[in-house]
Length: 253
Length: 220
Ligand SMILES: Nc1ncnc2c1ncn2[C@@H]1O[C@H](COP(=O)(O)OP(=O)(O)OP(=O)(O)O)[C@@H](O)[C@H]1O
Ligand SMILES: [Mg+2]
Image (cartoon, rainbow over all chains, first blue to last red; front, side, top):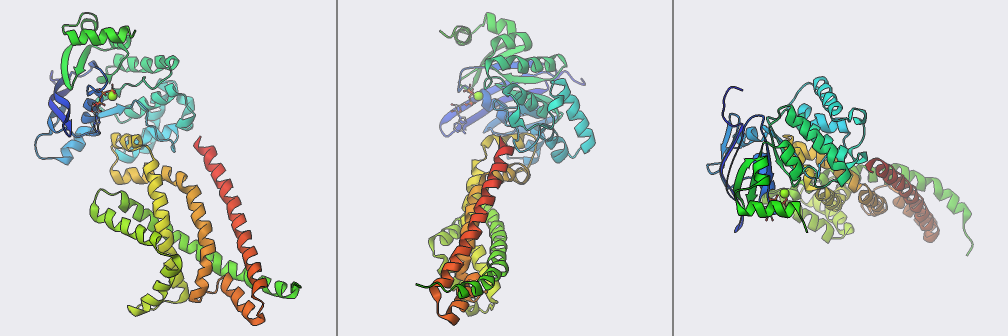
C-alpha cells in the first residue's frame, strides 16, 4: 500500500427525504484490508450509507473518498466524478438481485465485458475461477432461478468480485436466507476477509461480526454512536444505546 | 333454407386467398410496426422528462379513446386533405399500426414497470448506463411478461383488419363482399368468412398457449 490513508473516508454525510433526516452527519473510515461491520436498529440508515457509496442514492451533503476518487456532495454535481466513485466499490444486495434471464456465468461477466470492456475470454476465465472458489463451478450454465438462496447469494458475491472493486459493500447478505443456508455465505465472506479484501458489511449476525470484523460501527438515528474493535463494542460497549441494542439482539425475548 | 353448397365451394378459395394475401400480411406488417411504435411510446411514458411522457400519454389516450373505424376513416379521408395521397394498403397499415401502437404501448409499459427495482439497481451497481440497462436487463424480462397480452392484441388485430375492406384493401372480407354482391347471397358468404376468421384465431390461440408454456418452462 502506497499510503497509510484509509481506503474509504466518509465525512459529514447527510441525507433527508423531505423532513425526515436519515443520515445526520456520518463520519466513517475504513483502511485498506480492513473489515468493518455496520450495525444498528431498523431505520437507522445503514442501507442508506451503503447506497450512498455506490451511487444508488445521492446524499444531500458530505464527502466520500475511495482511494484517489473524492466527491463532495454539497458542491455542484460532477457526474463524471460520481461515476468514477461508484466504480470503486461493488455491492452485494440483501435480495441478491441476480439477472434472471441470464445464466450464472453471464451474470458474472456482464459487468466486466459489457461495461468495463474487458476481453471476453479473460473475463470468462476469471469468472470461472471465482465461481470455483465459492463452489459453484458446476453451475455456470444454470439459471439463477434454479439455485438455492445460499447459492444465489454466492453468485451475487462473485458478480461483485468480478468487477475488481477496491471496496466490497454487503447489505445484510444473509438476512433473506433460510437459517441453514446462512453458514455457506458467511463462510465465503470470511474467506474474502482472510484474502485481504476491504469490506463494509451491514449485518445483524453479531457472532459473525465478532469473528470476522476488525471494527464494529454502531449507527443509530442517522449518526454513528460508537466505533471500536469488534470484541469491545459487542462485549463492553461504552454507550448505553449500543449496550441496549446488542443485548436485544442477543436476547430477543 | 337450402344451403347453396356450390356458392360455398366457389367462395372458399377466393376467401382463403384473401386471408393469405390480405388479412395475414396486413396483420403481420401492422403488428410489427405497431410494436415498434409501442416500445418507443412506452419508453417515452416512463421517461422522467415531461416533454416525452406528455405526448406519449396523449397518444395512448387518443388511440384508446376513439373507435378504430373512425381512426381508419379519418386517416383515409384526412390524409388527402393535407396533400398526402396513399394507396389503400399503406393507408390501412398506417391506421392499424397507429392503433396497435397505442394498445401495445400500455402493455409494454406495464411489463417494464413489473420488472423489480432491484434489477435496475443491480445493473447500476455493475456500472451500466440507463439505456444499456433497458436494452440488456429490463426489456428482455419485460418481453416475457408481455407475450400473453400482446398475443391477445394480435388476435384482435387479425379480426379488426376486416375493417380495411372499407378503404378498398383486398383482404378476405372484401373478397367476401365482392362474391356476395355478385350472387346477392350475403349471409352464406359472410358466415363462411366468419368461419375462416375463427379458424385462424383458433390456430393463433393454440400457438399462443404453446409459446406461453415454453416461456414458463424457461422462467421457473
Ligand atoms: N426512498 C425513500 N423515501 C423515503 N424514505 C426512505 C427512502 N429510503 C429509505 N427511507 C427511510 O430512511 C430510513 C433509513 O432507511 P435505511 O434503509 O437506510 O435503514 P436501515 O438501517 O438499513 O434499516 P433496516 O435494518 O430495516 O434495513 C428509514 O426510516 C426509511 O424509511
Ligand atoms: Mg437496510
